[in-house]
Length: 46
Image (cartoon, rainbow, N blue to C red):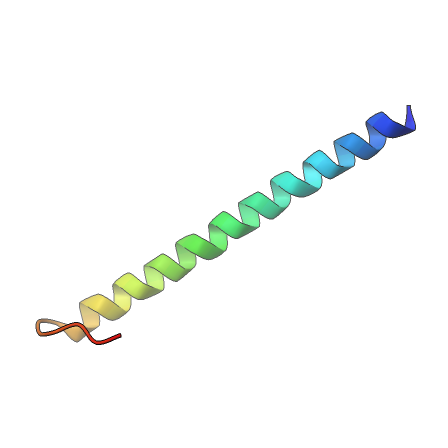
């Protein structure tokens, strides 16, 4: 029974970590798009 509890806890932890990672990635992409739009036209400099 203990092994099932541990497996369930690890599954939930991985789902939370995945959701957090996706949220961070989406925020980074939104920030990059906002920076690209604020520059306007011209050559891209990164």
